[in-house]
Image 1 (cartoon, rainbow, N blue to C red):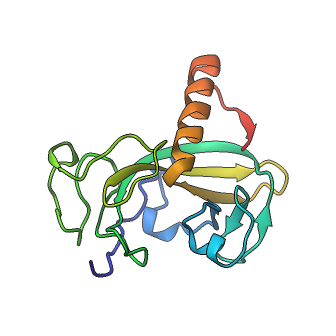
Image 2: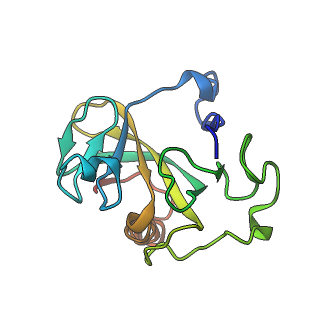
Image 3: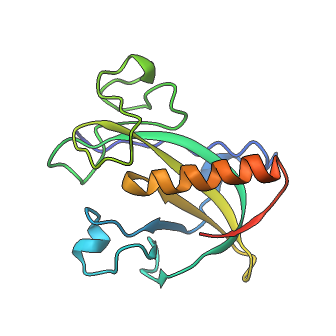
Length: 168
């Protein structure tokens, strides 16, 4: 798969700011198969894609959650073969561009099992740091999806749609 041009994140709750103009810092969770882990970063820490900063905890107010899918071909961790920014249709430039995710034979919804050569669910959380008041994005994929899914379920049930602060 070649390089994909990811579609801008849809931030409808900020009415005058088109998605492509928003570029908050991005954090990921260091996982065993990640480039950060290969560089010797400790597993389970939050890793800033821009600065390389590592954090044990993020105290945040979550503003939005975007549900995505990404297909990384076996042996290719450089760029995804296919992706979806809404888990409904494959994005621009992917191997299944415009096709329904539900019909894709590579679709797999079990992130708690380490798998390769499948299209797995992921999350992109837009949040505000509770201490610095700075916005950031947290991209969660791989084996961390199950933990975030459980956390979001807990808050959805317990707090309904109220704003909340969490330590991830």
